[in-house]
Length: 490
Image 1 (cartoon, helix red, strand yellow):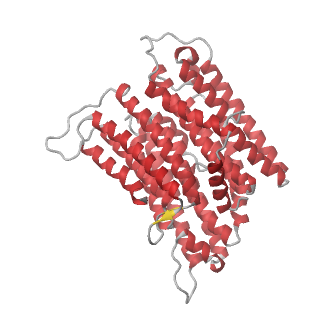
Image 2 (cartoon, helix red, strand yellow):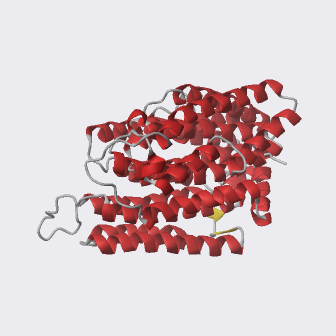
Image 3 (cartoon, one colour):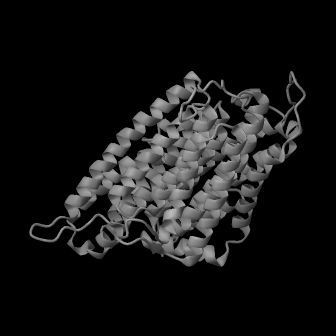
């Protein structure tokens, strides 16, 4: 059953390149996303399971991140079908006579989108550090054409920056994989495969000094892909230049996959008795990311870059929560859910705003609430959720992390945490509130009504964010607690 989670979107992606018509491709995208969501629900209900050899296995962390990725992709696919049908005014269609593959941008877009789901699923299921590295690298390669979809010189620059910076990061992660193998090697002893569970079982025999060095390289390597400061330089450009549906997946799903790579090696460190070493580094990088992102959020003139820098901040919050451990680790995993859903909603709404106003400049967007009433309301609700306002889910997760810091007597960390959250709130409010309010400008064409396909997916994501602030289902609480314990939580 696990193989189907990888094969279904992969086969659908291949078929998307073969189909000659736009409509069947869009139906294929939505059908594959729905099939993946159903298969994910079935696999998760069956509980942790794996293939012989345990290279692919749904473990405690996968049970949490796989449904989140699948649900977000389904919402993005629904929105994407509407976007492609109404807002993308067809590329030039002149495929070579007799060519096997279509070279139409929409075929590339849908095919790579489905391959993106395949590679992210593979990251989540990978239990071998070598396969994990290959999977993370694959996410970079298949998502690069998505960033370049608009064929603009800025999107080209963002794509190259994404490829170059992330390739440097992934090279460091590969070196970390080699160092982990060195930590597991013992003269005269049987070779220990780089499987997460095997390394944890044999953690007493790991060489601590090499394990620590390996963790540093994993943190820097995968931290680059995750967007931790100061390794985040690709993220604002890629998120702002990609189509909004892609930005939602980059921020809400891909960053979690990179974080998962760090969590895997932290599991091994915890089992080897070196968990404190990894936690201290995560606290450091978490606070640095929050602080640097807050500075760039202040007076940010581009609303998509604003959301991108917010992603850097929230990755820092998640790293900080895991680094603090205890109840804060629970808060970090809950925050991963809240951030993905909220940021997915906001990037989709940003797409609605961009389609109408034809600009990403905050100063040129006014009166969204009047012109796009549903999108404007969701834009405001998303702002409140993202900045940790009650009764939305991020308030609960951010408060839980703060509670953990105070219980551990880490007052300086708690003060810095609150200060950076306040800075981010001020920066977000100074941009988003004027966009929603005020008098809208004159449009050359009368704005058309909001379509269900452009507002229902973000509205559903927002409803889940609101629910998680009021009520966390017992089964979800159990899954979060189990994931937190795997990395040294309560």
